[in-house]
Length: 93
Image (cartoon, rainbow, N blue to C red; front, top):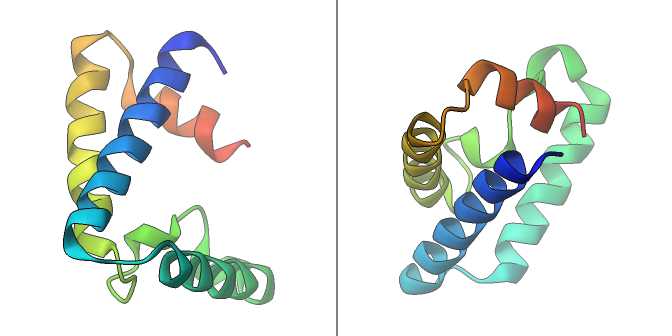
């Protein structure tokens, strides 16, 4: 990843971490949900596609993920990163 992409990922993760901490959502619950989600992706790739676990409304950190993504998109625009191109980079990992 280039510097701008790494910066955007870091911003997203930092915001999401802080917001989940403020809401009392444990890292254990997040990790458990993410692992189950990735098992579903393996079993039903056609249903999951490129969605992230935090995009599922049933995710314990759904709201926090959505807010972090909004800020991430805003910063991407500010630093001249096309969201569609950035998303391809992140999804390729």
